[in-house]
Length: 209
Image 1 (cartoon, rainbow, N blue to C red):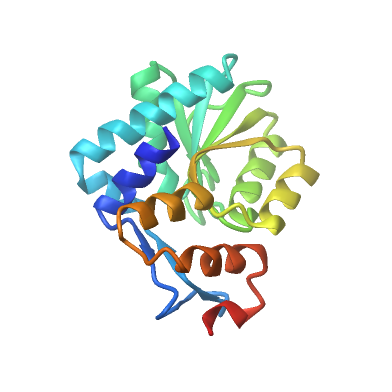
Image 2 (image 1 turned 60 degrees about the vertical axis):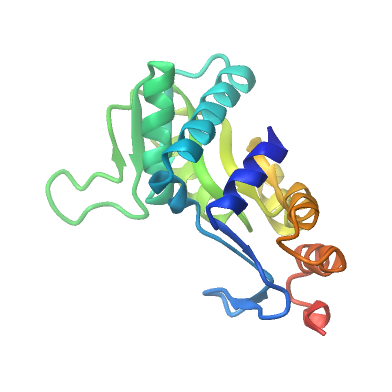
């Protein structure tokens, strides 16, 4: 599954690997990779594969799940489609509560004790998904874990999830992505180590040279 997802994301240019011309993240960090999983939604063939993989992973890894909750905004559509495949309820968690109406932060019915799986598109440092998990726990949900489409596998993200007691299962990861990218000539083979060096120490820009 990991290799298939990697091939599909590369084929629709949802993942760019560019160590020779780094991207700048919002945090200011220079990065050899940029990921935009929203493009999955505009590629029906890839979308079908990814959403079925999400549903299959939820069913296999979290058999007691009662509801899916998407992260806002990127996880919402993926949670909705996977929930439809599984025949489960679905909702989503806003980045902050609305300032009008019922002032909801969690959209969709969620009773205390409901067993929830969070659907996220991308995990880097883990901050966004943990914010969602915290909101769900505060509302009384039992968060079984997370299913994400892609993870960079950064030490900071892994550590933060572990500290919070949150299990994440990703469809694909950076190690597999760079391997497949090199095999299919999306990147030069010698770039693999540079990209993984960034992952292991994002603040050290020696990989750029």
